[in-house]
Amino acid sequence: MNTTVVKEEAQSANVNEYEREPIPAHERKGWKSFLGMYAGEHAAGTELMIGPLFLAAGVSAFDLIVGLLLGNFLAVLSWRYVTAPIATQTRITLYYQLEKICGKHLVTIYNLANGILFCFLAGSMITVSATAVGIPFNMPMPTLSDLYPTSFVWILIVLVVGLIISLVAAKGYDAVSRFANIASPWMVLVFLACGIVALRQLNVTSLAEFWDIWGKGSDPFPGQQKFTFWHVLFFAWFCNAAMHIGMADLSVFRYAKKASAGWTTSAGMYIGHFMAWISASLLYAVFIQSPEAVASLSNGEAPPVAPGPMAYQAVGISGLALVVVAGWTTANPTIYRAGLAFQAILPKVSTFKVTLIAGGLATLAGIFPAFAMKLLGFVAMYGFILAPIGAIIFFEHYFAEKAGIFKNYAEKQSVNFNWSVLLAWLISMGIYYSIAETSDLFLSFLTFPAWITCGILYLVFSKWMQKR
Amino acid sequence: MIKTILKIAGMIGLLLTVVSPLLYFMQSIELELNHQLMLAGMLLWFLTAILNSFNKAQ
Image: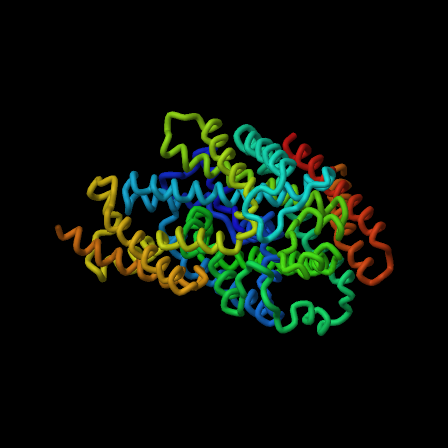
């Protein structure tokens, strides 16, 4: 998962740089600045959950490898041709752009949605970290079907991990941000090391044996949804939908000299969302051969997915450190960003307090393993909810003149709430969420239709309302 | 001079992190030794990277 924007926004909030003005020419950066950032930022704690969940979904080798290759390529294309061109033309943050179109009050609603979703995401990262911290305490690990806390020790460990992460986010964001930058290259290599060690433990000596790990797929584990090629492709494409077609990364690429800097996202996609996911999947492939997992499966129960013990058995203490550091360095800015989002709603409350509130929510979410165990579904929903807002920006940027509507309507008319935006967002989400629920469809399949519909509805509603 | 030494030591740390699992994969070392070499690599990388950042700050 991507936390680039989270960190960048958080940093910019600290130093208050160009939040309400275009980036000047002398501050623009070449593509190399983005390459390292994206490569490191997508090797997060959540990758350790997503890889195993693919295996639990019974995905085949072809569907996984080719689905990830193509899905990630589509994500890169989305960054390059949807986000980066607008970012390098307008050179302002998503939030300022939205304020111009939607008005301050509607941006607050977007911030609230964003903040709550960030808390849940941070909660799943706390869950991942807790699986590593819990090893010395012999803590029973949550299984795929666990929705509620599994033991008192689990609750205690999540509370301690959550408290530390929240306090650090509230007090020492900058130090953790610097530590995250230091840890990035090492984390990427440990992900790779996990995969290499797991290959030996699976007795893989050839490409054919590697392919056979997933083979032609299998029935999903109890309680899991079966994943096909299309599930993998659309998940890889849209798990960061909020960042690319949702335009959150306008805030990042506004610094780029050229829109071609969008290609650098491929480093993040193919390191984090290809290599790291496959490595984590291999770790789980080793684990499900263990007597404990075999016993669970033969009883018709889903085995645990515990990144801590899986990484520890493969690469020792480095694995434990990977799980803790990857979870911590990504949960930290996520909580900080959620705090900033809440501060827009509670402007009189200090940053320290709102960050603690966000951390408290994230910790509460982390106590429930459901958010981590259902991460594929949650991440799909996260993209589905936030992506349509990007369509508003995209359609206004390219089609406002053709449609005969004013650009930046809220700014020009000094309105705080643009109903065209809210209606387009809610109706598009409502229609496609209902379709997903009634037809039992994976939500990522409907992210793009919802995005297109939201953009078209925005033009139609704006034409009608602006005339009035 | 110190900066160069720190950089080289850091690179060795990263190399240990990736070479020792490869050696384990090729059945040249045991899992336990792989764990120890990776731990050494981790400590080397973080120590040198943190010292380097202090150096830069000064």
